[in-house]
Length: 348
Ligand code: F0G
Image (cartoon, rainbow, N blue to C red):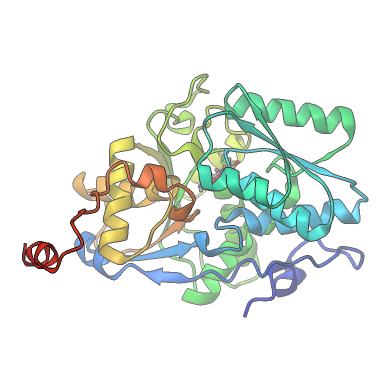
């Protein structure tokens, strides 16, 4: 079993002797071959299923690092703004570390499972009537004015920890894939992958950095449109972000790898969620399913080269947001508790 990323990849991370090695056994998530989708799309597709981290998203990779460094630096509390997953992770690692956690959320736009996580891990949860971009501004102000450690991806240690996913992919495949397809919200994760592959390239552990394909939802696609958006809207609430903090880093990462940004509609995201679950048995949250939606879209446009090796980063677990999943899923069949009724249904 994994001992956590600080223990596994400590020599590649900016740790000191004084950094506490926190661990909830994050990382070491499976790289699952998407057998049926690969056949459909004539590629070799894998899912890096980071929804199997301790709090159900990739955020744990960066959060273990950010909270460990906050402890090392003497922080008495941490704070974050979040569309849900960062807050779940911050709350869990703060509980583990024994320090208070303040969570600022955009009111009414956080999946129920994520809200439940932050509350159950004991964070002080504050719902703010504004979108994520405004909430993040307030979190930064609180951090600056009150000296509370901020654990959003403006904290550089977050992105350091998130590099570990790219190392795991290379370790497992023996090299980097041709393409890496990844959802983009605040644009931190795609930047972390770029840095992680680049670090491995420098160490001779992979032969190139994959083409980075960053995917956004159509109603929240500042990286695709090339300008910030004041009123982002999408069913994929995790990436409902109009002003990505790491937009410059992400643009550079995509440019350097001759990749691209593209967007998919809410309808395409929900269809992809059902397709991924029904075809290859993986239930990922809507934001993560932008990756599958984008491959389907590129295939239709004849822009998906046959035979390439593609890793889709499935950033979060579908169980966090069952309400959204049920928007398109078929309803259960309800019958009377009688054998005849059941037999009839089973024969249909
Ligand atoms: N996928 C999921 C499931 C996310 O929760 C996020 C971001 C992303 C993708 C995008 O990653 O921001 O690094 O580009 N969630 C943040 C949060 C904003 O608060 O949980 P990014």
